[in-house]
Image (cartoon, rainbow, N blue to C red; front, top):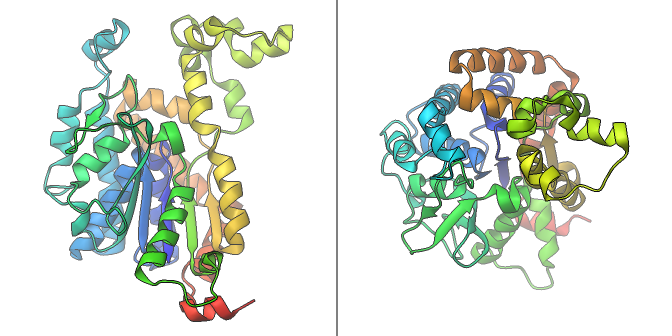
Length: 366
């Protein structure tokens, strides 16, 4: 089983442009995917790709081009106006309301009325069940399938980030929050779901250990990372909230200048709210990468190019959309010529596109 897992956060805006290059250089990359997994913005992208493949009307490169246009459209829908910003700052509601986003997603060329059950690929969408206070996976396969859930509802449930979008109310009277609060990297949830799917649809043979099924999994994880140099250069204007224009409030400057590590709620929440949010969302991503690599070895690959994530968030909400798209295209073009992309293309050719072992052979090989 080949699984494509896409992180949440702003990285999918860049990743979908890079996926186009991968498809162009290694045709069949997209069509080989048997399960799409995503969190938050990654869920938007994963569901769009799965929906267009299910229709069978477009070629892979056309699907990816459509997804780039879709991602650009999302930025316009979520772009912050002065009225929305005032509402957020006064505590009267989130930055964006879901009705505009829902209307955008319900367009026939986006998700329309499609349900998870209409997809011909497996799907795993990460969210957080705020009613039962636990992680939740929307999936279109046994056990506990959610085939009747619309793609719109699954996407809204996975992207309801506190203060940016309202909690999402599902058909079962539950309330959902952005999946990034529990797993911004959906790779481990996708891996566990794939193993569970195989266990139910193809029960283990006598004497077969469940761990043997890992040899039948190939997982391609895509995300973004902020380099240390970029992290240190981010101005207080973006990371430190209203008072952050003072460079002395920059978290890294504060530590290096005074050596004071005794930060309380004022330093963490009032002066550095985005810094704290970034820490909580991104802190566990590499841990998931480590776990998946240990379990799958060569059959796991993580592509996470460097990007200025917090700057990109600010530009997506408050910057010029046209400038943002140009910057993304330019950065993607630069990344396509880097050694990391060449290594990724080699892995796609030798592992992702390689014939998968039949389950019985996978079990027999030591």
